[in-house]
Amino acid sequence: MGDKRFLELIIKEPKELSDSQKKAVLSDRRHIRIIAGAGAGKTETLTRKIVCLLLYENVKPASIVAFTFTEKAAQGMKSRVYDRVRQLGGEEICAKLGEMYIGTIHGYCSFLLENHFKFGDYGVLDENQETAFLMRVGWELGFGKNGNYTQNCRTFLKNLNVVYGELIPENNLKKKAPEFYKCFKKYEEILDSHKRLTFNRMINLALTNLQEKQNVLSDVKYLIVDEYQDINRAQEKLIQLIGLNSEIFIVGDPRQTIYQWRGSDEKCFEDFAVKHIDAETISINENRRSGRQIIEVSNQFSDYFEDEYDHLDPVRKEEGAVYIAKLSDNIHEAKWIADQIEKHVDAGKCSYGDIGILLRSVNTSAPPFIDIFRERNIPFIVGGKVGLFRRPEIQTMGKLFAWLYDKGFWYESQWDRENKEEGEELLYSALESWNDGVPSCKLHSEVIKKLENWKKIRLIQNTKALQKCTMNFSSC
Image 1 (cartoon, rainbow, N blue to C red):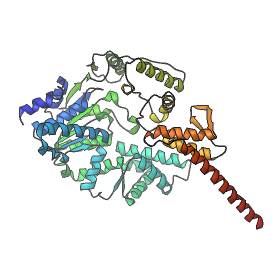
Image 2 (cartoon, one colour; image 1 turned 30 degrees about the horizontal axis):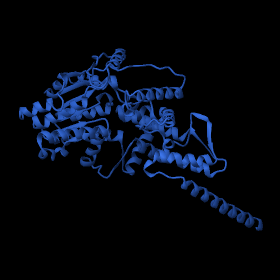
Image 3 (tube, helix red, strand yellow; image 1 turned 90 degrees about the horizontal axis):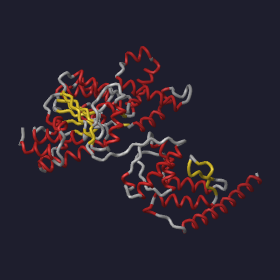
Image 4 (cartoon, rainbow, N blue to C red; image 1 turned 45 degrees about the horizontal axis):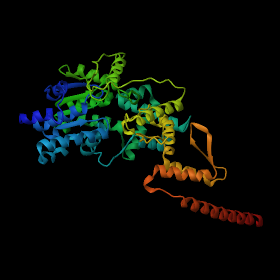
């Protein structure tokens, strides 16, 4: 063990941990399961656990593997760990932190396959790239013979991910779904011929190879897994395999599981305590994020879940507020929310930057809000993909193409078909869209004159070319 002064600093700075957080950081059990509710400070708990291992228990960085759900979360955790280690331990130990793995499960599998199992010359396809790849090679698999080709490709991919995620044995596939099995094996052959790996296949390949060569994991002594409620059975098996010779520290909250549609199985979180009967379960219930009324509603809602969990305890003193508004459609909903935003900002209760809007889907639900906020000059940032033609610079190009055609038109909003832009209005609207979307490179009114002159010249040239073509055909 290291200097106890380190331990005191780790626990108390920059803010002292709660009793449950301290218990999680200091526990010496081999298997630890943390139930961390929303806003409970789980990232800070994980960070200080890693810092404690490095500075107090003098663990080698190379012996620690930490899985996060996204690369963004991994970068955040890396930054926190590096900053704390540098502040407490100095630059010398920071130089060795590169030997520690903090990242996604897929990233770790890619690392193993590339460095230990002769897949170094393979590239990795993410989910969107795999869809595009399958659309290109699906003809070789016979997906164009019957029905809709695109839908056939998507259905195959969906079934494929179930096979990988649930670890369905190939013998079962061969007996019960022989046609799918043939396509499945052919697809893997095509992937290998192009030297490509996919996210779900990487995990299966890592499992297969690790079972034959477990000494690859001999340096790993501490495995930390965040968002454990969102893993699938294949990831669970990989975690158990890595954990055969290491301590396992998992963090999650089954109340927050939202990825069943992608194959995650929240029962893995409960099964952890069953598979490891020595596991210590620690609940971190303090919520530092929300007002008291929000926490109260959250607790009432969670009481309807099948499994019972301790209620969250609000730390903030503010009461906050919870409202339910029933409106006729999404347009009125967006207008009502815009009204509330303007009301609170004008009253000086908050600024625009203090407000956030959560949507079921940015792609399908955000457009009405975008249109109405722009109309009312409410500044906003969209976190997510809203579609190519929602971007102002792309709208500029679309309007200009519509302007080139005499009968061209443009609907500013797909929700409002009564207001249609036509003729010269398109040109001015295109300029406005560009200036809204690219304020650092604004275009001025003289651009309109240049475009109008260019269009006239082109029309004259095209008319002369058409007349010449017509004369040539007539002489034939």
